Image (cartoon, rainbow, N blue to C red; front, side):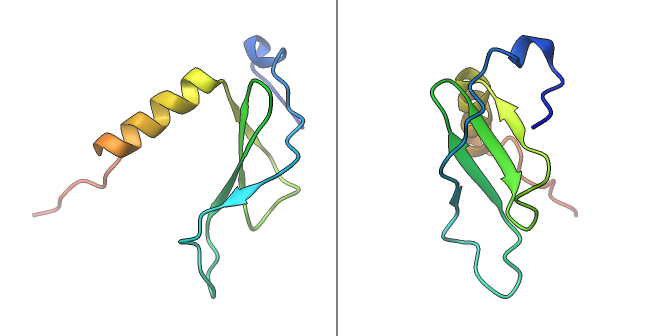
Length: 79
């Protein structure tokens, strides 16, 4: 796993168990998977499990989830 941010090198990247949304159904299965370690969250492409993993601190993850829940990342409405 390649962690490029120096401030994240102290994070535990031993992600053992990955979880995929139950909303990811065949035939596409286009989804991401998430895993939690002792102090970090990993996010990867479910179609490429051996590829890159995005690593977040718990604070970063909570900010992202909060933004998603509040609609901050919704697609813009096109007139």
